[in-house]
Length: 414
Image 1 (cartoon, one colour):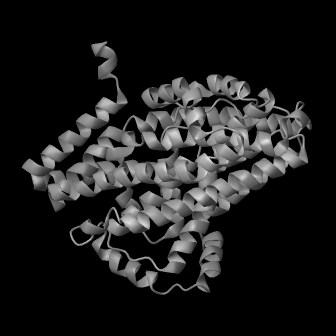
Image 2 (cartoon, one colour):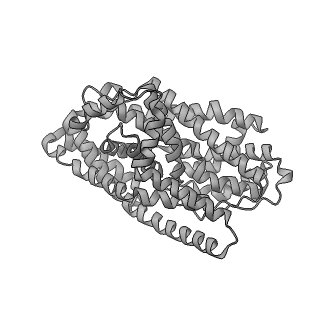
Image 3 (cartoon, rainbow, N blue to C red):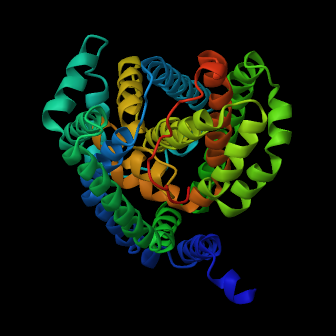
């Protein structure tokens, strides 16, 4: 038991955070020198980002086996509606709560570029949103690669049955499996990066600079709770099941997700539980497996809340046009999220690379609270279970007995 405890990633992060805070309080000059540890971690992820986003989106779309056009359309409409609702709700709550606003006068992540960022934030107008997105498409390789992945996956899914297309789909799944292993290896260095980020922040700005992180965590839980109560609860009720009954029905699986951090570990049990609620088995497998890539409301809430938190921490005032641009960009980048550990963090970096308003380097600070985001994975799992009920009710389960199973490979841990 002690040996297993020593191998816990959560314990490693906790020790790293406490050590970084202690170094920042006792020896600020040395703590400031720890910043490259965080910057290097973010830079490595940035190098892998285009390749990773292409593979995740291409394999996710290629893995869809939708034999019925009506079911495909309903899945697309439902998933996009949930993405828009979760992102919009996060915008409202993070905008009202202002988790990073009190630190803006004390912290400046990139002093030399912050003035330029502030100046650029005032030049956009409502008429400039389209031009901003077009500029991102024309000059940002990340978005171009994401769109290429979407088109590649759509072609493979459309050509299913063709020998070359099936071989390419299997190759993509094998590469994604190896990519997951690579990313899990990179994530082992997260405690070191968290140590560097916390040490630098406290060493440069004092112990008071850590308080906004706690507020960020509280706002995340508030936003996820609001989404569950205001969005998922009415949908569950309209689908014939109360949210409380659904939670009680899934309590064992939700506890498994909470204590293991793995949403995939609960997937077999969730399929059986949803079948017990009247959802046809094949439909449950289809919605849950595709939802693990395209219906991650908790990850979407984290994405917007984190971007706005970092903007407030950096003292950057976003205009209405900036907010709309962020929302539209996030609708695209959230397609690259999966149930993989750290996927939401990677998607956040991709979003900042496209948004150009918040310094990417500032994201390292969030590594210190990454393991506290249990609300994110629970919202993802609960959202996909509600999706099963909603799609089954919308599709009329009695007519989807032959709905084929989505084969997207086995996703890694959340």
